[in-house]
Image (tube, rainbow, N blue to C red; front, side, top):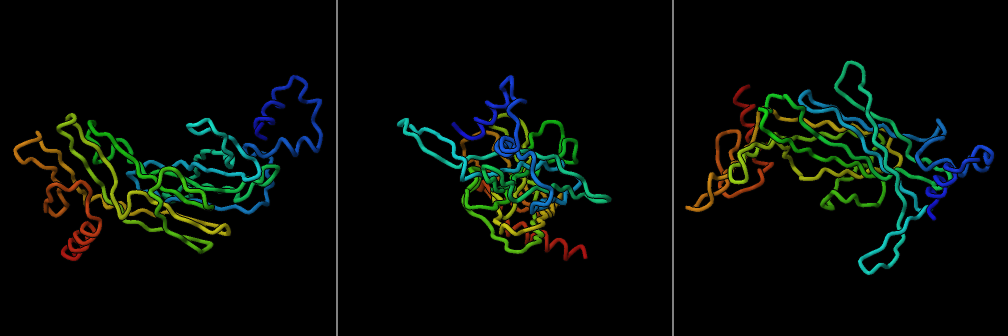
Length: 268
């Protein structure tokens, strides 16, 4: 039986209060992160959130090598893997700013010796923003901060490594609008940038991490479905300067950067 399953079973016993003792208190602590000491080492995760984006919610995962869980493969063979615990936190807004942050322990300890594995959050458009016309779906961009060797399932395996105790991460990101015609007449609003996934590795002594996306709202790239397939019809990719690529499905990030810089120079 998993340690946390044992804990939950004990919690359901009718005479549970009679079993309480200092030793049992120690054993029953730590499955959900409760009863942790206030002086443990912590890390603050923050995002500087542009006005047209929803505030982020931070999904925090801890792993335990000491407490194992079992799973079975297609041949019903039993395998053991590190147990994990996930909690989603609503962040606090820092005074007079658009920065939302949460502070979490790096190590929870206790019986299972829980250690911080990763933190995930999303870039997501607010409904009612200037791009939203009531017929659009909006997709999110996932951001992952990783603190151990476990590879989150929603990545492409690529990541950036950061080694400081205080890290500021700046990323240029562009609105990516998709106009569907063949599979239904609707629009979809996404993000595009230098990577499809944004995953960053950190040392365990990191104290503060802030993600600062610059969303270039005036530089929208648009992917347009053909009205019908056939007669040489192709997908059209319309860049902010009016240039068009045919047959391409993903915007060229460096091209977007060049267009933006050239337009800035002209306006200055």
